[in-house]
Length: 336
Image 1 (cartoon, rainbow, N blue to C red):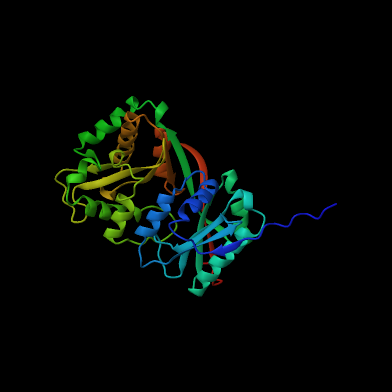
Image 2: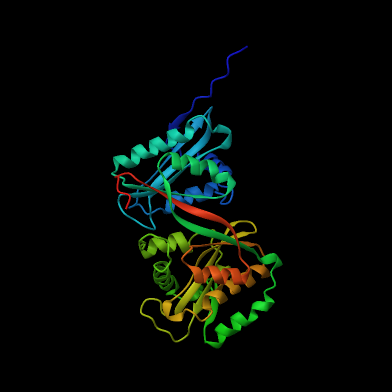
């Protein structure tokens, strides 16, 4: 009886860009089928990243093929010099050979050398993420926050029954205009930047947020090629003159993750305008515009304490499909 063939060896190295964007994206697409990554996504991420924030990547190569991708960097939404967000992905064909452990150990070495005190990453309760959750928990990561994912298919949705939602908002003197329609407003980007920051601070996500510089925010958010400006709407109250947001009182964005698949990036209304159906009308306007293009599936993500938004989504027909987790690990022994 012949001896078993030993596992193929592998090497860790820094990515060679742009050549490695394609192979890296291929690994990430297999590991994260809900969020298909393209080579163009990786290139844009590198090109538009805030140069003041640290970011590192490492790949695992086996027999001349990239089979693992690891990356980590500052948490740009909740920045502290010692807080980092990252992840490790190994192609299913190459698992069980210590590749994920090696990638993690290398990233941990790089981050601890920088004085890292807290690591964050994401996962979900979907079956394909079960090995990843076990990997994290064996290394001392624990779930620190949950977000609920819900979906709706606008191709089979009867939106005529929601016409009253739009009429109610129009009766208040609020106009719903797409980002495309507002492209001629020279103050659009600045007002949206300020509006987004005010709304973001009210999202109950169990963390303290960081305000991005306007240029960086515009590049990342409004310049995102996945953003669908014709399906993203702003609630405009003519005559309003807020020093930060002008006549913009709320907005909701839709992005395309792949053909027929969309996601809500932000939906919110200023505190002074809440409880009047504006947020619901923004979502209805987006769904109507998407349906006019042939429709598609929309995903949205909400936090358990945000009972108002969860109730609104359920009333619109969104169905909860998964729970997403933010995992955290403290490296300084402080669990607080």
